[in-house]
Length: 448
View (cartoon, helix red, strand yellow):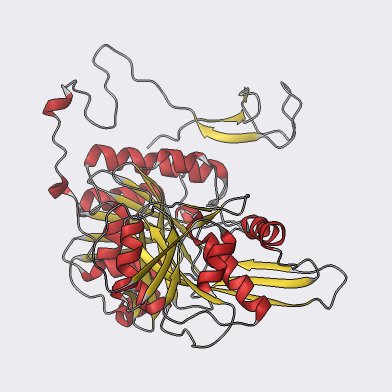
């Protein structure tokens, strides 16, 4: 096979050069040249694209049935993907080192699908030891320890698997490029070639990607635009729970999450996450409040904890885990202005128990209640849940899907829930008491 020509393109101005240089002669920027493969355009009237089906069809004649999806064998992962893996699609999975990305991908081999697992970081012996620990066995789970892209594609064409897993894309290299594996050009070109192969052959691929210290997927941001689905594997190594969150999904919603528990034998799906997250909750402790959050179509009951204590430093501390720190600072300002709670000289610590991160404003009222409870050293009733967004004027604003939140609290045995007024349009008999409030001060009186 003839070696393809390469060129160096400036990412700043787009100028190309025959060899690498520290400075772009066109725009004057330093270290902006990236190696690319010079693609030869096919000549002649009959030239066709190498990816996909070039036939023009009416949209009504395109078959896109959901039963064509490939089940992963993990219902929590299928939930995030929208029902399974679409043939010919490419999925990018990112996460912190040691969070369990390789474990999750290897557990796909517990099903009946024919899977080719390509590892560029482990030897075949290491893969075998991991597979024995996870209980993965069978003739349909094929393994390959390879980093050469041409060898990987040859194995895919030879074995014709139903799914290909590449762990990780930063270790794969294209021989035509002179740069080292993991460089921007290698990662981008390797992903592009795998993507074209997946589309043309109809074989879905999952590539595992490293993340930077800022928590974003390493490599050029164009990777996330190229692939069909981007999954983020989140969690704290000091906690056993892991969350798969969809950041991009061309075939489903990006609001769903999958929850797993890390165990010795691998990742176990959590069927009732609300009950699990509240299992270690202690009665009679101030600074604890339960709120109902919605992740996709799933309601989750979570414990919001707060600790207000005298400051030992000149500048009071504000430490937040599992929530947006700026949002918590805003709520503290509302408490001081609209409710009269002075916390300016106190250290305030806010945490969501279980290592979960919540971004929706429906937990605002629970955060305020936990802070007031800790500041007054008065425990909130163990059977009370709180839902509501808090505005800058001290009003309690409505949130979406209140019916699901109330039903989840009722199912788990809570006897009272505080919600914004008018949140439940229908009036029906419930075992749980529903308390509606308008203002922050009224809510604190009802909760405490």
